[in-house]
Length: 80
Image (cartoon, rainbow, N blue to C red):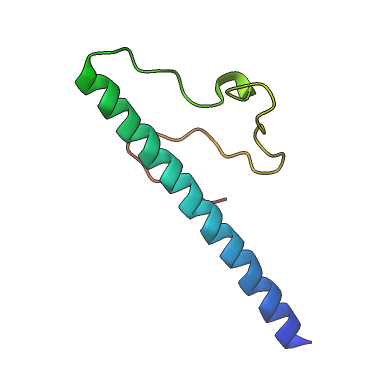
């Protein structure tokens, strides 16, 4: 019984860590995109999924239950 509980806890921690890594990668991509637009002199596009709409028709939108509070500039994503 204890092993099952321990395994479940480990699975949850792994999922949280993978989600954290995903958020971190998205944050880094957004920063590099801003740098590219700044260097090219073009206006930077708005944030991805602004207003909760997908970027093109048929694209998957944000998953319910995976919403995170807005990230602060330069900060690492928060894990809930």
